[in-house]
Length: 252
Ligand SMILES: [Zn+2]
Ligand SMILES: [Zn+2]
Ligand SMILES: [Zn+2]
Image 1 (cartoon, rainbow, N blue to C red):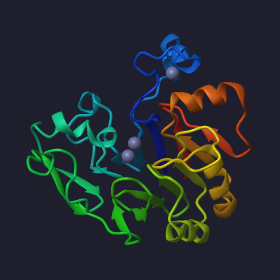
Image 2: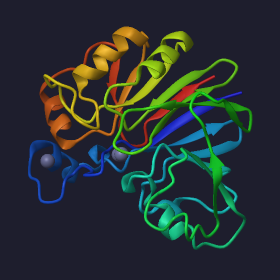
Image 3: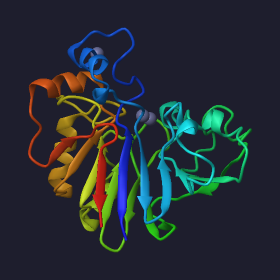
Image 4: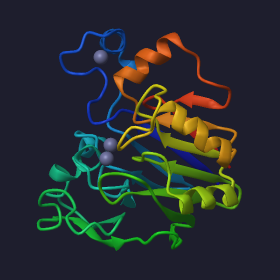
């Protein structure tokens, strides 16, 4: 049994480098492509089953063939998390199930013209479901659109994916405290701020949350160029790591 999560993107909607920006972080990302950040997303591989966790990479359909992917699992219907589905839906082949929150609007005309995507797999907060043997629990998050994080659990592994969110609702925090994830991947869009920003976490908020959760390995994602600039000058506390595109997280 093995669970591998590959971060296919660790940026926000703005990406890194930012169009027209010549800050140190954007300059570095143009010089060395390993510092670039694509839209926040992951490939979750459990044994032989592949789940694409969010679909914001515009060239998504060039990276997979029909049959390579068992399903999509979506956190929410903001463009930077679903835009790869727009051309892919017009493809040829079997239907691909899409799991996600019961957001009636979705994004643009995705629901009206789903093509080969099957959006009927809506999930509910704290109601566990299975993807080829991997247990998944939807966790409500704080965001400007209906958004779920996901707790992924196998016999020996527990990972929480928490993006996009500004802080965490009490119920979700309690769930994490009780279920002890070995790894947390969380929205940390910004450098430490005096107050939690509106729709995303800053580093101070993430540190405060983990004082309650107590996870030994916190991986930051949805990172902005401003936060990258901050990290070029400041170390992260022990137990916190900046995610990067193509980072692999391997569990049992
Ligand atoms: Zn986002
Ligand atoms: Zn910049
Ligand atoms: Zn969002």
